[in-house]
Length: 173
Image (cartoon, rainbow, N blue to C red; front, side, top):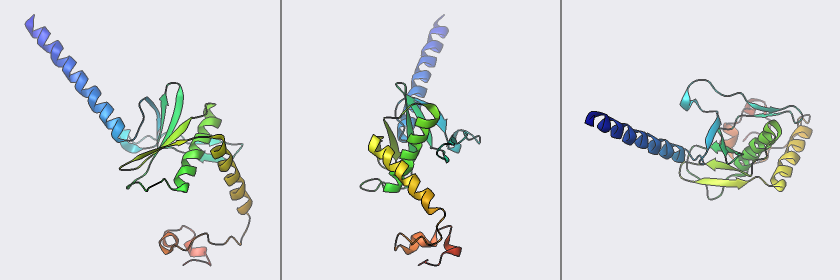
């Protein structure tokens, strides 16, 4: 009888330890509390989730995580490296696109999304203004797709060196 009591106590302690380790792991990944409903990382196996896609916008994307918390869906984008003072505009727009895709494909508008850096997280509110900025940016991108004379938008040689269009660009640095 005493053996069963010790075994029950051991299993209870082991269960609590596993719950604590899971919560710690989720926090270190920059994830808010809640249930992970989507992941685009290979951390949990080789099968990746299907991309989010909206045909009306011609837009597709794969956020690193979608977390369901209190009935809301929160996109999480994980970036390697240390955080800048403020998130880069490109990172904010990438996250905003994921918010827009969640809104369009799941009919649930996220209140915010999270950009997770190695040493810091940023919660970015998904406001009507940010949504409009993303839609305006998509219009600009679509209108420039057919142009052949788009000027380079920067003077950063490292950025040019890593560009996928470097071999056909007449303005490379």
